[in-house]
Image (cartoon, rainbow, N blue to C red; front, side, top):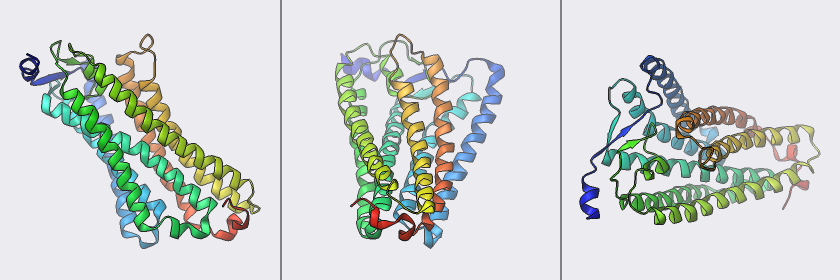
Amino acid sequence: MAAGNHSTVTEFLLTGLTEKQELQLPLFLFFLGVYVVTAVANLGMITLIGLSSHLHTPMYYFLSSLSFTDLCCSTVITPKMLVNFVTEKNIISYLECMTQLYLFAFFIISEGSMLAVMAYDRYVAICNLLLYNVTMSYQVCSWLVVEVYMMGLIRTTADTFCTLKVVFCKAKIINHYFCDLFPLLELSCSSTYINEVVILCFSTFNILASILTILASYVSIIASILLIHSTVGRSKAFSTCSSHISAVTIFYGSAAFMYLQPSSVSSLDQDKVLYHYFYFIFYYYILYHCCANAEFADLQPEELGCQSCCK
């Protein structure tokens, strides 16, 4: 019976950002512009790092990986949203919806984990600069990136597999502009208990692992910076850390705003607009983050006063 009901769902209808026709064209032009800027900036960052031999360092390797996930994440959502602005009905097929759900979750989870890896990279760079190239070798960096994507792959596969078991027999209208997990589960007429348990377990692990890594790294970094005698070294270290902290705050802050609100005060009509607003703010912080990190590349061991760095 479940299989029969499940097979009848062939498409969903997305409500989009707004139903006001007079706003469709301005929103189309706005998000098209934002997407083009985001895509060009991320592609430019990846190309610049790839072509510039002096940028072939762990820090910029992680930045290029982060730019790649940013680009993919926006590409999963924005093109379909732009098409919906100029079509009468915002229809998305079942297969396309599940694919979008999978890819979006994969890249978002990978971004969060990548920010944690970048925090660890800064810890090594500031607290153990003399051994930085040994500790953060090409093999180590490659394995860290692979582990980031593996964590995203495992979590997303589990979520999507459980979602595929859900029976959708209510109205097929998704109150969102893309196939996000929670708005999709709202359409279920079967039990979503397993989905909720899987989400809770994996989310707890991913968030705690990332947040604890970031906090531990920055506690050590701050303790080390306070021991630096050089004013220039202390200023540069604080500068590169503050830009990364800004990116972390925007990313996790917007995610918490979206997904940790009590249901009594949460409104999907408001959330779907605010989510996109905060998410694109995160993109611009990443661009600022990349530019601010450029000065860290010139930081020398004597500027950090490595004799006082944490061991």
